[in-house]
Length: 307
View 1 (cartoon, rainbow, N blue to C red):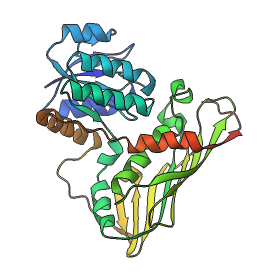
View 2: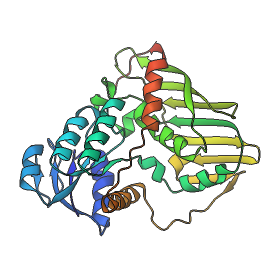
View 3: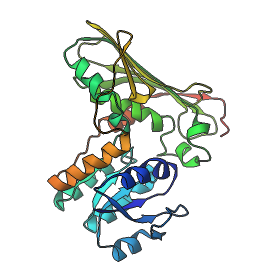
View 4: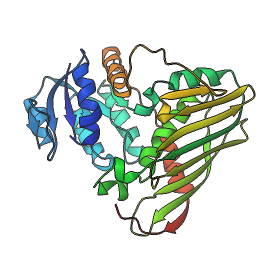
């Protein structure tokens, strides 16, 4: 199927383009971006022009920041195209619900992708936890924003999400591997005095049986980067780390046995399945937790941050 990629930034170049090129299901037919290009692929700066001139494009994959994404997704659906949304799927929950209604009315597929759920060891962690009673869960998600988002000021603006841009990856894994739903109980958000979005967050969740479910997000981590979920149960401990790529149970490494490797190749395989079956996959649980954090969060102003 022909696909168009919208927003040719770092994530598109590093992940989306290689995944599309490696798949026998997809052919990158066009791109839309203010400045980015993919060699050998027709490039547009006007989205409507791309849609008008490429009726063969069945799917539009949106990789721009969340705030402008709703308008592009709506235009794509109105033009009869299936839509993939890079995480987070929108700037608000209401936008996402509206897009799903539009997609259903037009019998089109809408896919809110959560790439971290496709990390190698997430399915194994989910299976191991299914038969166990949770005692304690803690997320440590700390990275250096300067390394991963150089010169990207939009992440500090309203709708940019700040530290929840990576933090939502952890929440997408957590909501996938836990056997029962959780909800946010409290949040402590740290805002640099010169930014409109938080640079760190401490979260506490309520779980039906687990005594403690907490998360520690920080975007000021220098040196080693940490993306870890630790779980204590009634029958041992689990550590899912390196963003879900590695797993230890009771201190012993668990080997990966999957057939298809790579988060984004798996996302595009799922999109193939959705379009073929005429279905959508719209899970908003991770975004709901982020929205709740902004609603419940106690705000603390910290020292200004210079990117």
